[in-house]
Length: 513
Image 1 (cartoon, helix red, strand yellow):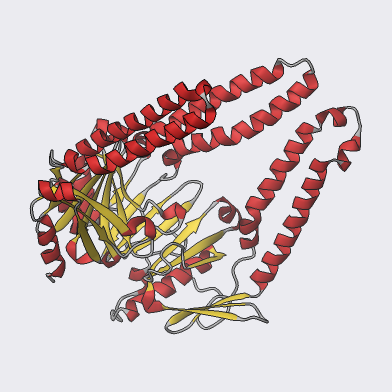
Image 2 (cartoon, helix red, strand yellow):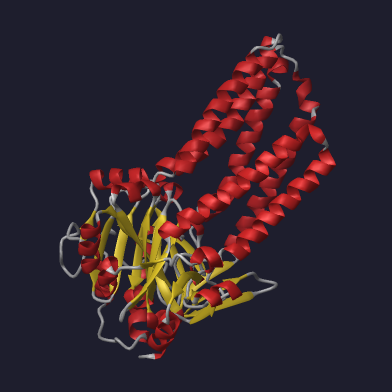
């Protein structure tokens, strides 16, 4: 599998297709601008009048094209002057010639090394290698992204994973067991068949997961965008100048199409994102593969997993379905990794069964109960609620004074709606939130329409804070916040109000090793 060009101790570059990936957004923007300008100049084109060439729109197209050319030149220069190499105990990245920059990442500090392949990379036969480290300072971005030929990427992952095993003191570990890929790039676990996975999702599982992942908000926005587009097109076509109306309608549809497609994709993305979802627990690692338009392969060390998230969308709460994600060091930093899926939507019994295969360390937390918020929490909420209501009323009063009587009724209706939303949110939170603490896990429930459970082992809590306002103190209530070693979106997690001494219990368990 080892490439003749990419091997230990030898410097190599990213595959040149990385330039296309990095400039793809600019190229797409130019195409949109050109099409828009053509639609706006349809009258001149139909009359064979090319006076639009001297217009402002055409100059914008030229300026963007020049920007694209400059961007391409810069990216080529950066690509040509960036080298990567694998040393004995580190990965070295060198950039530039005049102002040379050298970044050395210790093998021991690497937490994850994963593979990803989007449509462009499938076309070129390349693959993206993504390296994450244990560093909190870089927790909001993948530390290293390298684009290589698929065979080179597989060798690179295998080589680095083997060195990670050795750095961890497991020098007898096999390189193949550290990165179980065969020569064709398929998962092959210690001689087992590639089809032998602990969890594998079929078409029915993917469709079910996609259905329960649908966002009611996204569906509402999609329907509103479609209705708004139809109304706008009807109004435009009703104008006297037919050609101008057609051009205007086409431009309106083009703009609306982006909004509609965006909301539509947000609605249906989970039907295709997790196509052919597969997961396997092998030793102290979990291997996950899935994807249709973008194929990803994750290798997750179990000792890097900080917590387990169990989610329920609004539809899933109605249907009694649950899905699981993991919070671990290094992953979850890029936007596409915000949800590190482990188990797709299924019943609670199926979730516990699949976790017993993939992550038995957290399987028992699925059935762990959480205590609902005490009724006295309504008293503790009066302080922030009163501040919110006063602010809404003051804003409405100020706006009424500035705008006069014409809009006064609308302004106060809007203020009343904001206060009503607050009350609805408080009711939903009261019915959803809760906390449980037993000998093994701290479990936090949160949400409004949707619900999320976070289960964390006490030893993984970096530190905890507990607070109470004067009303909560009088009612014997406390709330808190725990902090984990993870990306910023997963670092802090609030503990809802509770009664009793759970805070002292949590502190004792954090200090017990």
